[in-house]
Amino acid sequence: METVRWIITTAPEIFLLLAIAVGTILGRIKVRGFSIGTTACILIVAVLIGQLGSFTFPPILRAILFSLFVFTIGYRSGPEFFASLSVRTLAQVVLALVIGATGLMLVLMFAHAFKLDTGTAAGLTAGALTQSSVIGTASGALAQLGLSADVLKQQEANIAAGYAVTYVLGYILTLLFVPFVAPRLMRIDLKAEAKKLEAELAGGAPAKTDNLSYRKFQARAYRISAAAGRTVEAIEAEIGSRTIVERIVRRGADIAPHRNTALENGDDIVLTGPTAAIVAAKPVMGEEIDADELLRSLPGNVIDVLVENRRLHGRSIKEVADIVGDSARGVFLRALTRMGREVPLGPETRVYLGDVMTLVGSTGNIARATAQVGHALNASDRTDIAFLAAGIAVGLLAGLASFKIGAVALTLGGGGGALIAGLVCGWLRSRKPTMGALPPAAQQTLSDIGLGGFIAAVGLGNGLAAWSAIQAHGLLLVGMGIVVTLIPMTVGTLVAYYLLRMNPVVTCGALAGAMTVDAAVTGACDVAESQTPVLGVAVPYAVGNVVLTVLGPIVVAATFSG
Image (cartoon, rainbow, N blue to C red; front, side):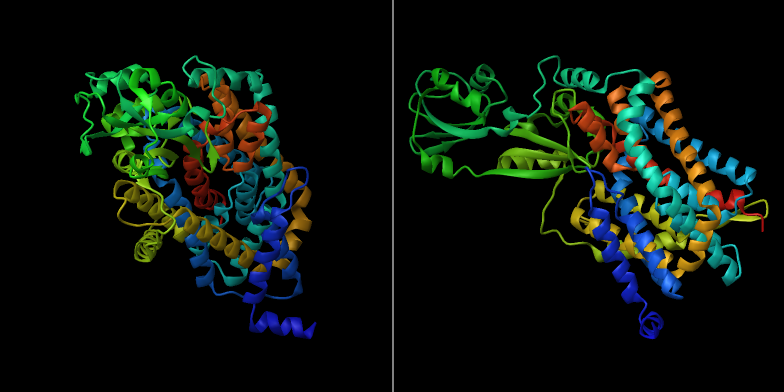
């Protein structure tokens, strides 16, 4: 035991990394498809390890770790957050605000009724509303109050205790509420409503759940006979399915395939488009020819493109095609991904900033379309460290600003400042793709290391006091946590469906987004036997991350009595 204490005193970072490792492994374990997530497991492991002794970490370490996490959250949500401030997505924004405001009111009511200290109230907020970043913003706000070291340490321990007791329960309740309770409150059959929505997205045609018409894209060569004398535009219109004449070779020379170009007998042409349309084009064109050299010289590609054009936000795919216009000629949408989940495709499917389009076509055509949509995701992209560091520094500086409400100084703190900086930097990146690169893989790494390290430091540094707080308020926190989790979602469901008239399937996805619980979307998709709930996630998730995070300083200002 003396050896353990010596290690704790000499190199506490070893236990911090150990808590991250063990908590991450436990968080990946699934029982019947369910897991409680890495964040809660890291905190629980850290609190348990914290019983071994007194861990001390420099405040700057925690500040840097949390800033990395919250900046990344803002960066990821920035384009969607600012684009959500529009009429097309207003209902989804309102839903996220309703959930956040209802949760805040309940926490303040409980804090007043049961005389909860500020740390416990903040921990209840973070856990029951399943937003881990509240821990950091609340801790930052407490640090600005000039408390003694012992009092501040106890308040931070109470935050950790409140979060540890209520988060797991809040997470589980959200997973169950979205797919099972919300549909009952709306009095709908989620599976049947999903089928209706799929039909609407397909423009009334049978839903193409596997999008095979998009995936079977290819090029074929024909020698012109039947189509001699007709223009490229006329041929493309007759074949349909957005098939295009990609190349024309006449007597060994390439001819530009403009729409008014007339085809001549004996021309060799390359058609690109969906397989079914290409194969059916033979009677219109002439004989198919074996022209490997002709096809090999036409490079094809499949590229993931991040949607960053604000004009496309909230538009249907049909509208996006009209806006992009001729730049979309010869380019086909193979898949649309939102927050890592594939979205059902149809003419009426809505596209939002931050979505990823998988485009298929020739290299030149895709490059032309990409310029109108956003920028291609490249695995070789490197993180712009200068942009990242400068952005966080400016955010931390902004977090020092404060204003008083009564005798209490209200401040965003470093965490809140870093969040705002992340939002702005993410938005700037969407407007100028050449600056501020932070690839998705790097975002995930910074987010995981930042949050995991911060949570582990909190748990280890306050393990003994947090365990005492859990023993003192455990059952009371459980009861309050259930209420603070379920009531906001209940109010949000009723407001969304009966007042805002949102589609019930989209409402389920929006509830998961507003509570920032990605896994709840999977549950809704499983019950609906459809990916349509994903349609409602993006905007509420972006708004929810911001709204719930800033509740930390608000709870501190409203509950701190000096």
